[in-house]
Image 1 (cartoon, rainbow, N blue to C red):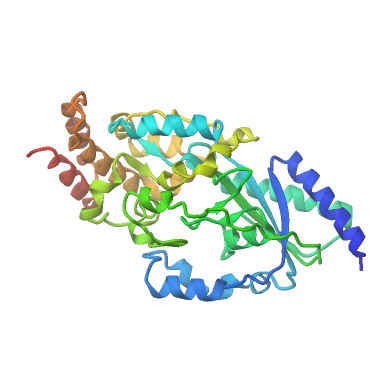
Image 2 (cartoon, rainbow, N blue to C red; image 1 turned 30 degrees about the vertical axis):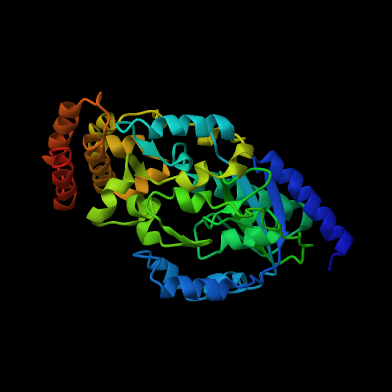
Length: 363
């Protein structure tokens, strides 16, 4: 059994290796997550998970890391920044895109390569380095890929605190970062949690386009644009479509208004660089992609997992909102032409959204 001094030394080496692998921070937490069961039960009882049935499938197991990987006594949490520029630069660009209804808005995290692959491979390399230094130990790496309460664990480790939009907020880096974990059987020394620093700020609640943040740290996913454009596989509720605006994959509005994101950092790894001009591309241009083009260009992207049908559904809603906008310079005939071209090869579900879109701006 290693001494406390030896284990503390190992953690310091882990921080160095993590930085070499592109992680901005590494911290360690215990496996007891205070209040996790009560929060999860309440959230599920309200039906706030919508059609994300996997959130209820494992019961309370996700509140207990030692049940996910038997033998676990600590969780190593890491964060990795993903912005293509610093916080002020990115937020200025996004404000400009928000004012142009014909431009597609795609969540910042999804414009580069799939973070699952990027973080998982680097976490595995980190675990291999630990094993080379320490010897064999029990572990398993995770990146949003199992019932692991990564935000709660990262907060407990001191990477940040749970903001009122229920995301992790860091004084050092805002919110634009990914999290990953290694569940280990090593009794590593734990880091102190971070205290909350939202104060009386309610910008995220006030700026949510659909009012999905129903209370501080409580999100009704059924109203969240990220859920509607990514997780939902069927029809987007008609009453919520106008609120989606020109967002076709995810939504960052509750982060873009967060004062702490003035400290958000640019990605240290090249994998998250913007691909296929997804930070400045028109809805009409994307509507011209057939299924083969979508699959080819979205290969290695988190966007591909929603499939071509949902991609077209989201585009149709956004183009309908562009038709209904007050922007006088929009080429509306081109939008209608693009919608009609899409309709010819679409599923019934997508056609319903296209027909809704074509009806917009008629009055």
